[in-house]
Image (tube, rainbow, N blue to C red; front, side, top):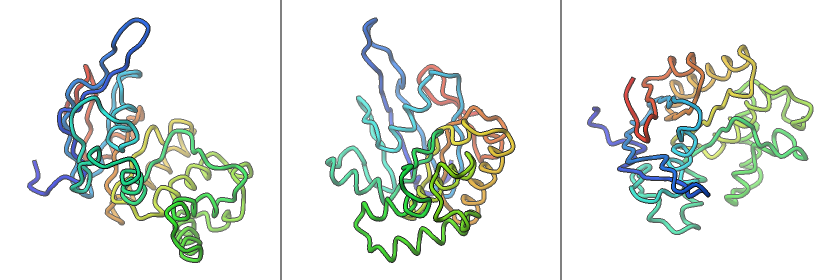
Length: 228
């Protein structure tokens, strides 16, 4: 294991859900270390808890026990306001469905995290415009999501995830709603961002080609992670 301090670390993370049929264990003591600039894929059968794990790593969902440390910060030791602020500036998220706001243009959607963080409007506009240009969407900046293809919408979502210059990008089946060709272009984009910009990437995926392009592949099975 590298001697470099991990950017993302999970220590004995436990998470489950109570249902009408009783308690269902999902994460049964997960340990994970992701190094800075690393690109990691998490694979596994449907329903094993991959998305749950990603949400815990991204501090979107709290574990029952265990710790998650991101960029040296024990995230669940923070109160909700400070956790929200930390998450907004440190982590970017891309989901299977882009969750763009349909009434806003691509540029306005990308600007949104900076505006929420109360960054100056000109700065937010300039950064969002530069990102859209970098991702090949400069000509789509004033278009609303409904006028764009699925692949274009997902690239806008990637730009939105990057606008706060996060240390890490977390993806939950980011190409799961795209056709194969468009999905592969998205995979190439994520790898480029990882290699050229040094962004740490953790992706949950069923896509074997995307997983194979990562530095490391882990399988979630029986509530724990296993190296492949």
